[in-house]
Image (cartoon, rainbow, N blue to C red; front, side, top):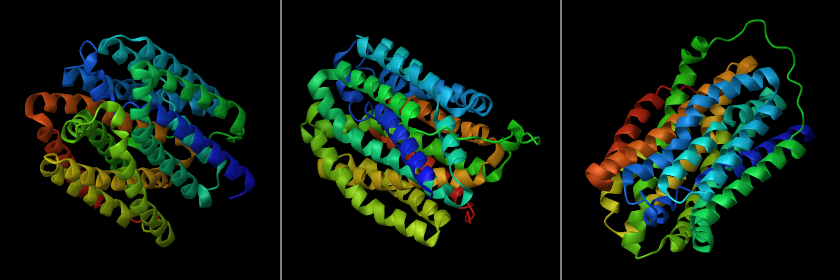
Length: 385
């Protein structure tokens, strides 16, 4: 990479990490911490609050991606971050689950993932773009890991309001990075051969990757509707003490994940690594109904989940960067991030509904079935190079 490419890649990965940390902080503790709020004892309402962010994201990703193609990346990213901060403030001031759900909807309306990823693609040459996209993917995995450690501590310090005020501050920090640290990148003249939505939706490689990111985030949110409560009950822990579980789990998962990512990049075996990681996700989901009966077994299964989650979060953006039509990255990445957001929303909805009617095992078996479907689709992914 050139110096400018490194600067843009680090800054945009940092922006992505800061914003995603603000989103992920809610997942590890909300199902437990919301129990004292009106509506917090209903898994369906808790799942809706977790997933509502994804619903508005799903509606706004494509408009924000198209807007970034027309008016530039920075103005669109700044507008989205303003909405994210405003929604976080609404959540911080809320005194019941309903208003937290409203705030989450406002947060999600700032759908900037496609614009940020397109900005990164603008700033890098094709031969180094996969490396840059992998940095963003790794930053998302790292944000998720940090959220598991920090969320219990923040809830113990300031309750849910303190957690949401921290999320608002992270949004402000993201605005500062976008305004002061990310360089302006000339995007050149738009192509006369304009890409249509139908072209993006018919692209086989993008369809497979869109389905994959939908599955991954649906499973992620659905599991965290039930897993924090299981950990708290089986380990006799309060929400503020869950970091004692998450710390060794995350450390172990990163020790196992990092060599896998390096080996994949060295051998350029992205397709093979993707299939192996999805197979690992299926294995973890099949083990969870058994593991949920004991504290140690559940912690071990969680370690396996985080290994494959972090690998998939690092792999998929680099694969999308090769498959997306280069002259209309905003549109193609908008569709990809819409699929991700739809997974976040449905994960909360389905997780809450299944937990209410069938308990945690219903969530785990749904996750296993979806992983199996993804593995069948992933088997058709060709080597990207």
